[in-house]
Length: 103
Image (cartoon, rainbow, N blue to C red):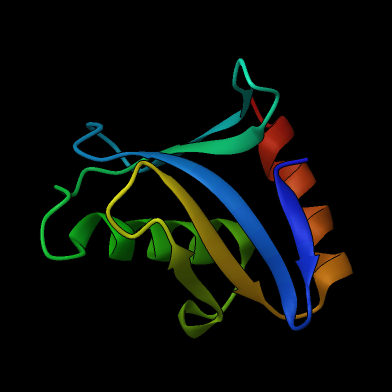
């Protein structure tokens, strides 16, 4: 699964592509080791936290969450990140599933 329940919401596993030409969610991907993550791309460069901030803003908009409810909590300098989504876990999970299934 590409997310797990946390005490105050969900932890989302994301593979981020900075300088990706557009800000977009590209579905769920499973790596050869069996781990799943949400694929995302942002226009921002991976400098001084700009790509992480763009990812947080993108996820907040796509999931209809307040910007302060989305934060990168692990993998700040890596492509594979853990993003904390604070709020009602069941509601966020439903929105995540719908988002991941979009073409």
